[in-house]
Structures are given as C-alpha cells and as structure tokens.
Image (tube, rainbow, N blue to C red):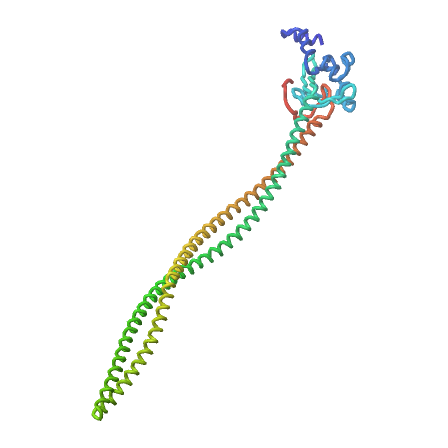
Length: 404
C-alpha cells in the first residue's frame, strides 16, 4: 500500500495526503492487489462491514462476500483481469452487503481498476444507502397515499358523474315530455285564439245589429204614437158624426111625414158612426197595447245594447289575452326546446366525464402498480450480495466514473 501511494507521490501528491483523504472519506474504500488480497480498508469500511481493519488486511477479499458467492468470486475477478472485459469497472450499482453481524445493508458500489506492477488491482468505493433507501420508501409511501387519494377521488367523481348522467337523462326525458305537452298547449291556444277572434267579430256585429234594432224599435214606437193620435181623430169624427145623426133624427121627427125618409138615413148614419166609434176604440186599445209593448221592447233593447257592447269589449280583451298567451306559450315552447338541447349536452358531457373518471381510475391503478414495482425495485433491485470485485450484471443504474 505504501508503495502504491509512493508511486502516486511521483505525480505530485504526497502519500500522507492520499492516505488522509481516503481515511476521511464518507464512503467505504477497499483496495485489493493482484492476488485478490485486501491491501486497504478505511474507517468507513470498518463501520460498514463491522470488521476491524486487522481482521481484513492481507486476507482474500472473498471474506467480505457472503458464503453463497465465495466459491467463484476469485474466478470472476481473475477472468476480468485476463480478458479485460470490464463489465463492472467504471459503473455504480445499488446492491446489498452482509455485515459481520449478519445485518444486510443496501449500498452503492463503484469499482475502479488500477495497475499494480504488471497486474491489475481493484478499488471498491461503497456508500451506505440505508438513509436514502428509507427516504425513497417514505417518498413512495407518500406517492402511494396520494395515488390512493386520487383513485378514491376519481371513483367518487365517477360515481357523481354517473348520478349526474342519470339525472340529466331523466331531465332530458322530462324536458321532451314537457316540450310535447307545450306543443299541444300551443296548438290548443292557437285554436282558442282563432275562435276568440271569430267570436270577437260576431260580438261586434251583434252589437251593431242590437243598436240598429233599438233604433228601429224607437221609430216603431214613434209611428205607433202617431197612429194612436190619428185614431183619436177618427174617434172624434165618429162621435161628431153620431151627434149630427142624432140631431138629424130629431129634426126629421119634427118634420113629420116629410122627414120620415131623412130619419131613416140619419139612423143608418148614426149606426155607422157608432160602429166606427166602436172600431176606432178597439183599434185605439190595440194601438195602445202595441205602443206599450213596443215601448217596453225599446227599453229592453236600449238596456241590452250596452251589455252587448260590453260583451263585445270583453270578447275583444279575451281575444287579445289569448293572442298574448299564444305568444307566451310559443316562447315557453322555444325555451323548453333550448333547455332540452342544453340538457342533452349536459347528459353527453356527464357521460364523457364518467368515461374520463373511469380512465383516471384505471390510470391510478396503473400508477399504483408502478409504485409497487418501484418499491419492489428499491427493496430487491440489487439483492445479490457482493464484495469488491464481484462481477455485477451489465446495464448499471447509473454511471459515475469511467476508468478501465
């Protein structure tokens, strides 16, 4: 070992400085010579393997390798020296070592090849990875917990999305039924509006006809009054004629035989006058009754005309209200159709959200499986116990140096 450091001193680095640096190194440093004997074992190596330096120096390096791998360990190292095929030199691997007390410790192993005389020796730099592995486990535990929470949230979202989708489907069905009902109501209101418009026209016509009928009755009452006046004149004439016939009869009686013929004529005239007076009285009575009936009809029609006019106004208002209701029903129908369209879109969105949530759940499961695989890799990624010079398989986890 001293000779090795003395050779390095020729390169400008004092031997004591190299020795001090290796002793103070955090990593365990093990050097073996051409016979595979340990020629250097620093303090960190003592702490890592649990051997005292004197127990290791000068002995075969296979003592640092578990018994299951000791039988071919020298052969592997010698094969590397002979073939020069450096599978492990210049690489770093995470492996495990067995301590003297049997404890298994995860470590990071890096090997360097060095010329010692005409042969090759090896330097192993071994770092205790217990804290790093524990930190990785904690990180994976946290990641696993987070994935579990995400998976639970995804499942909850999927459940909510399914409920929303079902509710949206029911809403869409209800909206379609409401739309159909509003279509029927709108059609019925259009029919009512048409009937109201027709009724409005008829009511206005009836109002005009009633006004005309009232005017006609008023004229009839006036005519009947005039007829009654004329009948009174005829009655007066009949009375005067009857009086004249009576006077003529008296004069004929005074004339004796000479006035007998005139008396007969006067008597006939008196009888005609009496009959005319009776007929005139009867006509007057009938005319009076007709006048009273016409006057009563006039009063009824006069009272009815405002009611008919009011009815026409109400029908007009009903017609206008029906038209407004028709417009409102059509607006509601359009709004329901728009709502149905929105509900259909919401249903499609909820369905897509359900699919997305399901996909996220599947991805969470994949991520959980990946974390478990990483956890297994951390625990079992380098389960083969090794010592300095052990032939480690190719494809190292990371390259930290290049020396051959």
